[in-house]
Length: 103
Image (cartoon, rainbow, N blue to C red):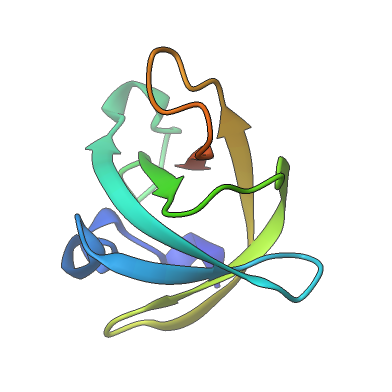
């Protein structure tokens, strides 16, 4: 199912609060900050444009990384997506900043 996800599926969530289901079953309030196509990561004969999604928590969190679930409008529940934490780098250090790569 992950191979069917396209950057367009994330567009309705851009800049809006939503929820990410974490591996332990808890739910973290998040906001999608950016969606970027990464054409240089495209594999030969691949039909999907690779892309990445950056998101941040809307509340303090200790979550680092793992397989999560996210409801995508027009697509359904995206399960088994690996979300990894990235450094705050000058942003609010009490929040979590995360990255998802779709190659």
